[in-house]
Image (cartoon, rainbow, N blue to C red; front, side, top):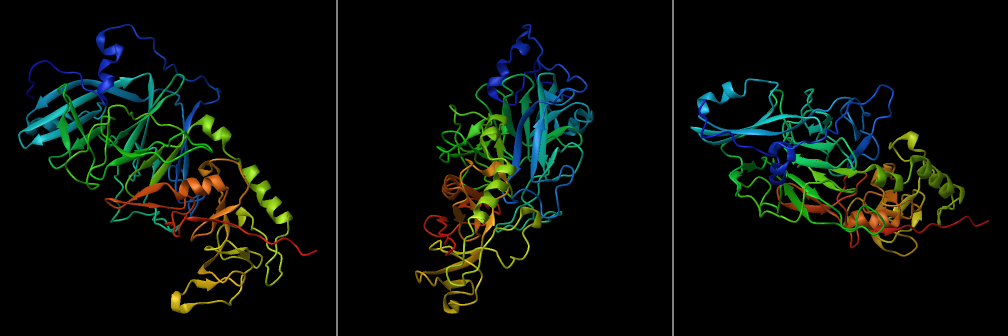
Length: 444
């Protein structure tokens, strides 16, 4: 092994270089172990967009649509220790210790930089990716637009096996930070010659993963006053950059110095194939509960809405039934006008497309789809009544929730963005992406 000068301090973020512990100061450890029987402290929850509460085949183990991140019994976080300049033939020897976390930056065939990490008793680390290996805490697979999900291995998956990692402080206020790339089975992160990487102004290393990890923090928090923020890219060291020209371009964006990798309530994390929503415990307290959603369903059904033509009584099905074929009482909607009917076979306009129907009340032609209640409460901005539906999928939620997601562009492919239904992932259409529902009450 060839060491050039004294080992330097490496860091997942430039600001971490000034951690008091690396300067010889006395730092009180906040990472005390949890006591038996003690209620675990929740850092937050990750919700995958597009599943409406559960994977199609059911949530199992680490493969699920929603995962709570809680304080571990023992801290497993890591922090940067030293940086080595190494001749490449000796890289495998330098990284052979599985208990030593490290990040390897290959600069050329004869030169690599390795940043070694050491245990951090103040943080817990959680890793996310497509790999089913034990070091991955949350196994995420590609989500297809329109509610389909590739839950098995996909040869064309664009999600990295070790996509990203989140480090959470073990003491209040339990700040969570996100970093691109996760450590593999050998406790290493490798950035090869073709990966975007560079030296920072202070002589350290940083880089980006192949398809990148994008993050968007909403303006005004995740509440009734929320507005979409700006999509950024997070580096391996947790720094924030503007987006590259394309998802896998080797030229990085510009450093955004006034923004950080700290996750906020409502932050979106895109892994190039799946998008995750971060909810804080405080934010989840403001979200509707499953009991509230069920009460809203029962209240809507108790109003006995009727089909204005067939005069049959309509009712939203129980979520326990799952999204199967619509039943006889299922409400249907013309998504261009919002008029709600029962199912009928008239009004087809096949010259406009197989799904196009003419509303018998206002004569507008457009998709005619069954209505399904949104059942993932964490995706809702407020506990408002289910008054709006996304177009063209027909998922129902509150007005503020519908309007927020309809104006939030989600990454798709290497450089495209589309607003999508958060409950099924279908791309939204029409002028507004959602429509206000118009029900007819009972005639008696």
